[in-house]
Image (cartoon, rainbow, N blue to C red):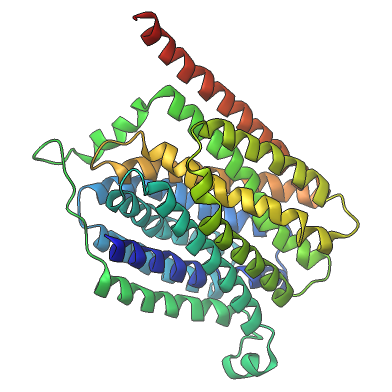
Length: 404
């Protein structure tokens, strides 16, 4: 069991590195192609749309067996999409291939997460989810830094030809195929318990999504708004760094620091917060403080000082939030249905990642501060939704208490 968790953590770490190599150079590449900044948001949004549509489908078919097979297919799709995104040379085709990449990458994101839940005990689930979250964040941070480094370092730009930023995406696509080979050689599917001897049809599995508990549905809506805010912060802080005159390496260094902060949080703080009984209240407090931090940081005249200090508190809270919400959602899944429930979760996450950059791109083009204020407001709306979840749960408990 321990070896399997370590292996899964390695998958998320490697994936975090590879899948973020292109992010620090994307704004500069898009500008170099004389495409407007707004399209940066559209490209990211269409990738998220692909993830939103793909996640529940991959989750459902993954619950029926052969997770490794679908993970491999999804990752190969991602490599193809990333290559043609850089080399198609046409904004419309670039939009399509971003969608294609998103649909493919939804497979490993959904099925590897569900596999972590399957092999974890209820007591260790939150801790293990925190570890994969930290591995992803650390990998993401290193990937950002490497992407910036190989595109700015004089020796490497000469050796690899990365003054042409499209080469970074070619490198990413090829390394991703090596990662596919690693999964093929090491990943083994779990044998899960099923209630019936035969698997339900795809149609009946999709139909069951409409019957989820009302309080869980509201929680998913809260997740949507909080993801929307987080996504705009994550993506437009890239653009903001670029607009303020910082280069790709400086952006990559900042993101790498956030990765180490996230790693330390996952190891030392998440296990403590996971023991809290009133987790909905804890999540609400986290989001309220996060909103306040965002309001403060992006109004400061000392931007670089504030993002390396106060903003890191937001990174800590964001790291704590993810395993808490994943554990809450997984507690509503029956045995053998973890892929389906995490697929639904990832659809709401992807919806936030889709809507966020579309609205955020428009707001940023009008006034950058509006984008960051909108992110903070999204956190507050998410807290309001959590309040409704709390009331619905209290309403369910009340009739049981009246029977005694």
